[in-house]
Image (cartoon, rainbow, N blue to C red; front, side, top):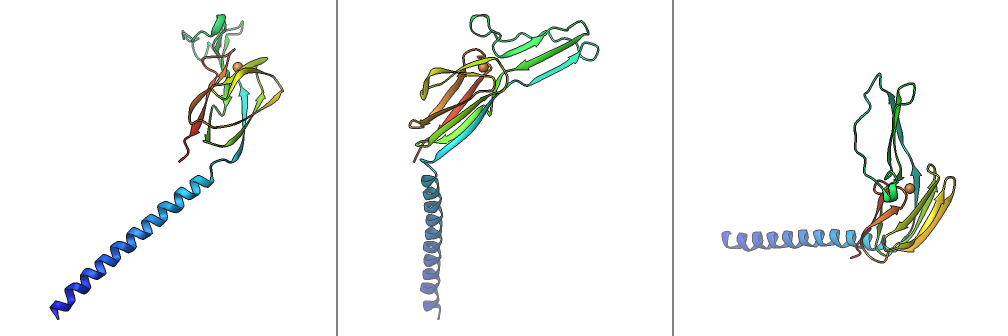
Length: 175
Ligand SMILES: [Cu+2]
């Protein structure tokens, strides 16, 4: 009896291991197949050009002695603090892209719809993909289309409001 039992037990273990290996490999194959099929898609992403603001009165909060980064040619760099007015009210604001980070897959056919909500004018370029600046004024919607051929992290850059108004285009590498 003992002589028959051990070969059967070993065979059962070997079959279990093979079955487990097959089930694991089929899971990973179907996962990567789903990911591959998600590449090369048409994607449209909406980006609003916004300016959140906050304010208070010196009676409630002291005016801060904050040093802000300077922008190009004396521009305020996308961040601003307005000194207290005659009533003591002071205000802070920042120009920014919303969303400021955009993620696509390599090979995607990407359309970015920019909409100007605040700020008189923004001159924007996208590193590698839209090298020439294009202008967006308040109330304008400007669409830019490109194929995300090269993976990496690229700046979406506003000339008037750098360094604060800088977003990221993240192109995930294909398999
Ligand atoms: Cu701007």
